[in-house]
Amino acid sequence: MTQAKKTIATGLSEAEAIERAKGGDAAAFEGLYGLHKRRVYSLCLRMTGNTAEAEDLTQEAFLQLYRKISTFRGESAFSTWLHRLSVNVVLMHLRKKGLPEVSLDEALEPQHEDGPKKDIGARDNVLAGSIDRVNLERSIESLPPGYRIIFVLHDIEGYEHNEIAEMMGCSIGNSKSQLHKARMKLRDLLKLSRAEKASRR
Amino acid sequence: MNCQQFQEVLPHIIETGGSADEEAHLQSCTACSDLVRDLKYIAEQAKLLLPMRDPGPRVWTNIEQSLQREGLIREGRMSRQGHTLTITQTQKKSWTPLGSVLAALAVITLAVVVINYHPRAIVTAHNSPATSSITADDQTLISQISQQQPEVRQAYEDGLKEANAYISDAQKAVDNDPNDDAARQHLQAAYHQKAMLYDMATSRSLP
Image 1 (cartoon, chains in turn green, brown):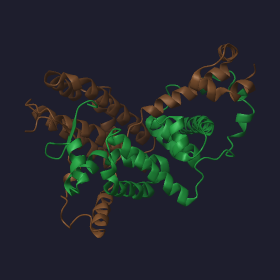
Image 2 (image 1 turned 180 degrees about the horizontal axis):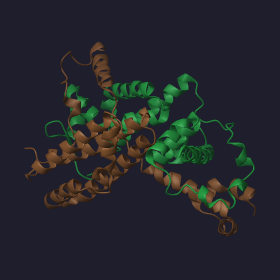
Image 3 (image 1 turned 45 degrees about the vertical axis):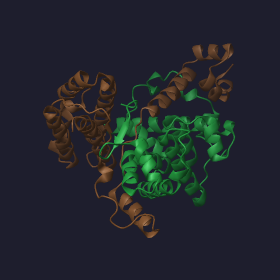
Image 4 (image 1 turned 30 degrees about the horizontal axis):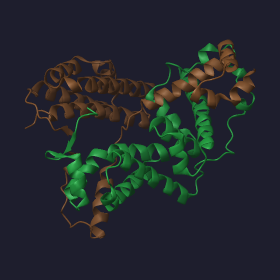
């Protein structure tokens, strides 16, 4: 499926739609929207954790796409290019909002400094096999914004640390450190969620 | 090496592997090996998360209106349904779609029933084979795809398994708390994901 050539609308390939959209063909652009809206919206939603904001940012990303599509030269896949454009739209929005994208001061729970002593001997604390998608999505939503963005970009969207560092204007080490803290925080959140579920039974 | 020292270099260990000392600690310390296992597991599970929700219709309406206001497109130039067209393949096939269409309708109907949030409907959906790894309908669809376009069979099978697993997870969340709106939205999205796969498969047979 992923290898196959995509077509949209009535037999128009994605490449043809891009070329037509570059020439201002609104119907071709509409086809591109249909093809990519889900991925762009999901990215915005995961990065912001807010439905209304995600919809606004999806709108802004596609408006920018319409204005900038003539600059697309095909050096990367169109989906990669659009994805990067969308990430930039979200990051710009977060900067305007003044939210900390990456904060080195954001501390983890106190037990992190104390080491994992509380886990010793507690084999039932292992998460493996106990995470489902719904819980994971919720826990990601609950992450502090700085952690969430790095986690989404690296672990879900597959960006490398050097790309994240470039996009976010931070060091590669900072990106790695934040990712680690995000995963640690997620581990806590997922365990908490599991414990709450168990206590309801 | 103690746990404190190990955890200080943990991000590096997860990224590139550890030294002999670090590996030795990992082998001997249950807490640290559990921690590493958990962190790797979280990263693996995150990779499996798919784009799963569509934006509301207002997004497209706003885009269209903005472009019209800016004079980039003329009013009425865009179709009202164009963006709902599904992705298809360039190679058209002529296999009989009737069974798949019926199966797709069954999936969509089931989704509608579940979205109504009636407790009895939820129980019915939970016991439905749609929540297992591959259902009989899925298997029929995969068989048809195998005959007509074997190169995409695996992609469809993986997609259906993924959708079914998502349905199963979301269904559990709804069962756990029937008043949980977010869980219902996940369930709706999961069924939508599956319906889309059927839709994509059946679209391939259209002239």
